Image (tube, rainbow, N blue to C red):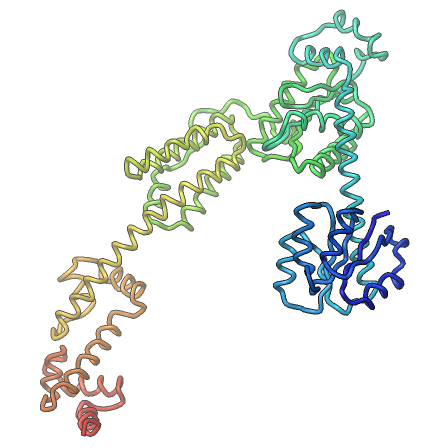
Length: 520
């Protein structure tokens, strides 16, 4: 039974909940009520309830202040907060102290009972996890006899013959020599302690229906599984072991399974399982690997994998991360599909990495080259790809910024030319590209629109009309043909008037009259 304390400054609410809710039916015991946070904290210090149901708005010490104070002293106590205020700030503050249940008044007894039941379930699961972990620790103190452990380690590191093994048959009280077995290797991933190795060993010993021997070898756990296991059953039990271990320790496990063979060949089976385990480099962490998964590649021939490093370098220099990212994906997919010797695969990655970082300035290149040892030590191709992508993105983005700045400088030059040459009736995109900048006109036009958002011709016409308006407004006696000549329409004032009207709705003469009338 879990003890519950009610806290509310409204007597009718505490009395109502005390009487209406059937506390025993949900596995709880109501130990008392309090009128405010100060009184509640005294009761909590004395009786240590498991669950506190409290109003938020109370005199003296409100519900949030009570949660904050209790969480510092008694972090295991769970809270359900009640409030007539629906503002999110209250819920947000409550969640900051680990409160998961925030109920708005008025709430009926079913809502409260559901919340209490959910907390009771959480407390029960926590107790079960703690008991399980304590059981594991207790079991670790009484591990399998040293003789069995030592025998298995010797079997997998040395070649034994029948005469040597017969010595152990009486010890095991079974005919180990006639058994066919598989080697199953468990390897923990990420950061783990030595005790975790014994924990997964203990879990596996409980879940496997039967096994011949087990031991720890360096940072792996090894099992000899008898031939009474079919492949489907073995896979199911391995998945249960992985799932159970992860549930309690949040650590993933990679498993390698050898083919079946006589126990005398345990050394060979162990090496086969190690080969399978090595292929987690391609298949990723947390998987179950058998001989069929790796296919045992033959020795790679010279030039088995062709890749154009310079093509990749050109993509990086283009500054297009989307193109670079796609190319990286293709490169690593090809390596993964080929399943070459792992050292050979790493050499291809290192070669491309070096080609890429040589694009950088000396100081930056030196910094990236320090990543090489990290890249070499990575134990999966996925992790190598993640680091490779990170460096490639930074280098590609640097080139993008350089290209962007270069483009911006060109367009600024184009705008400067337009402003200076606005009276030149030959002024055009092709004229600027061919006569002033010596560039491809189509490329310059696309670049201009990308940077300014306007076509070159639209930009030029708009600027000419704006200049014409300034001339009309600034010089009352200016003639239309003079304006046309000054802004690049040459000796064609009629065309200038048509363009001006299209943009302003007035001819130059009409605009001039409207401007003069406006001033008067």
